[in-house]
Length: 323
Image 1: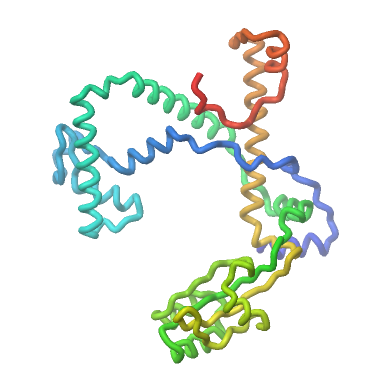
Image 2 (image 1 turned 45 degrees about the horizontal axis):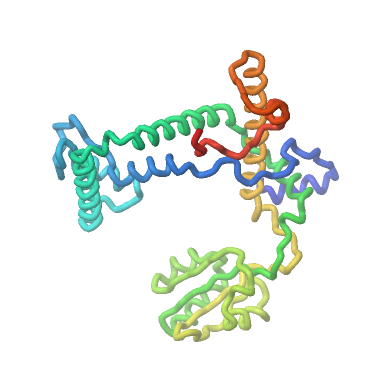
């Protein structure tokens, strides 16, 4: 049963849903993107598996003691969503791997592997990863129910009200006018661009979802302004291209967005809000236990230490701040 159908049942039965425990001020972001973790991801993506001690594999390249094996290359490209059979892509990755390891080899020769900044960064990354692993374990939040989502949507209409006129359209770019008529006839039945593509593989389809009318080219706006929903335009030429546009839906400024349109957005908000509250509870508990056991010693002026001990925890992330 879709959320729209559940909403209709709730309205019909006139049962007032109690606000979920998420109905508090939404904090849109709990975590910042950790630059250190991003660095680790980039390094892993570029370097890939080193392949030490895998003598049963076919070597593709070697720089010093570091080896890139054929199976590692294939596995890495597949993991990145790239075509592992493409000779061009494999050569590009191979060259990147060699270049990077040459630079690492030279850096080690010059003694930069002993630089104190490296150990400092490694320690920071270690601390960030430890905190994140603990938070992932402690802040595991169940998905909000459909009823929670419907209730939030009902109680916060201002957050889901359109601020501009919007439309949903399918735009088909055709090679010529005659082909445009064929596409136009196919649009009489099709409601999705993928359905048209199956019939006409030589066209380009753009299905952008809801879009502000003010962002559309004037030539398209003028042609869809008098269309009824689900009607296509006649083939027309614009900027040296033949086009056919089908109007899927129209909504005006001030209209409430449909619940199925905002379902994922509301779910993400409720999960983020619940995680924020759990993080606050976690830090509050840690503070309370630290005061009891004397784990924390704060040497500040009295007026500040009292505030730190008793204030509500700050929920923004500070793991990137150097001590």
